[in-house]
Length: 638
Image (cartoon, rainbow, N blue to C red; front, side, top):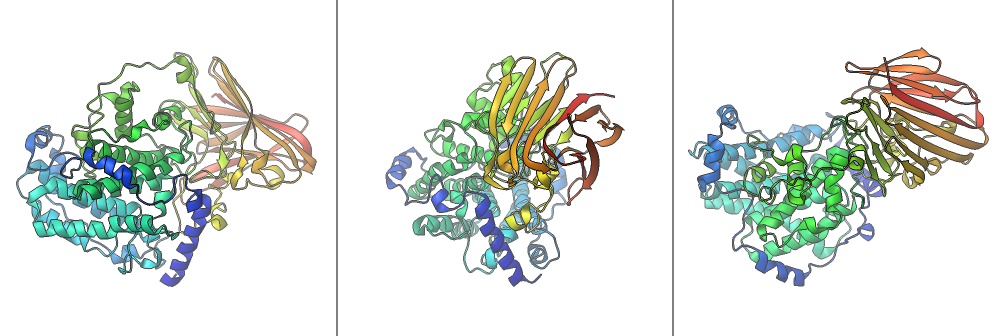
């Protein structure tokens, strides 16, 4: 693939992405507008006289010496003795454009490793304070500020950044800007004045000026549109740019401008979460997006002495609870949308929110974070005094209802768990939602079944990103992204359609101590004119070892085919015409299926698409029917 063709394809993909996410200026809840000078003047007196970042400069030794003496960095410092700064690879940067790689991962990994290398060298010098790594830091920093692009190759439209035509901000730019700013702050006068001056100038040119220009011109170009995005992009980019500004800009007015930008535009990112705290992007992207909101909040909090506090936004507490509420049992969370199987909440985030909100999360409240050196941002923030460490752990036991159930009522997502101390060791996450959510899979009505600490059946999670995976023309041709790869119905052979109108409507809820029932109408998710009714109900029973029943009640104007599916990475075998057994190393689960008045058949298909393989077990009517039910029941079994 030549680069001109790639450029056209990637711009097309970005335009298509605009259709998936609410990026258009007119759609942004907090749209572009001129800088609010009144708010800027309010912020200025709150700011300290000098810029500062996370932690302390290298010459302020109290905490740095304690960290060194802890012994938790001994292995890191030993490994740093043979450290070589990662080089920039033009071949890696253009590997997607040249067709030598199927995605931008190769180029992106190379670029992020360079930011990591700068952080590690900075850590080593600040810990040792012997001058051994000053030249390594200086050479690496000079190499990075001379690097032709700070933008991920996938987002360097027309390679304008690489060719120096113009500069834009996206995830990698924000990472570079903040990492460089932290390096300057931590190293202090160990770095030459000329290098410091040049580094700040590059951050200004590549990060600060593009953002200010976007706000000033209010142009509709795809570059720098993160300001208006309502997904993880917004908080990640704002955290990096605003954090860098508060760390290196000497002029207090300039810092106040960026503090205002962080306050105002971060509200767009919050709009991407449900009012009930639900994150449609899943746990992995929650860690990434909300984790950067945490860093942005701490940057502003420290810079203003707590006078600017992003945690006062009403629904942030609900968002903070999301990773706990979405867990099924034993730390297992569903791999919803582009989240990955096995994703867990970042301990730093949970410590931070639990301490700040007094949530009483005892498993996180007393953690320490010494020894982590992958970056010089949150890893530094967490080992130095911060707003979270200033608060004592709260004693706030959760009620039985909170333990056994989480219901995101605005987002139509139910998580049902066992009663503590009972033989039941299975749980379920049952998802409604709509098919216009961030990183959406067409998955209205999907579910995930967990037994012990394993997912036995349900959402398959993400697959590796390709150049066209966010283009609607191709996105839902991937079975794992479309409804085919999910445990949802296939009426008249049709998969679900994308869009906000393809949504679950709650028909009934009945939650008790022993049983949870949720019924939803999911017919709107299908473009099937003959479909007159499609209700999906989930019943979760806590008695004994427990059970989960999923029932599809359907009706057509004329007889049609109908199919549902069990999606699993477990090994499986057929026990009888109406029963299969899912097997894992830690436990087994029997799955029975019935269809009153209809006869069922089973077929299976292994799906990979570049990710971990899984099996889709289709359960379908042998003959078309005008109406009927398929009932699928999960029980722990031998």
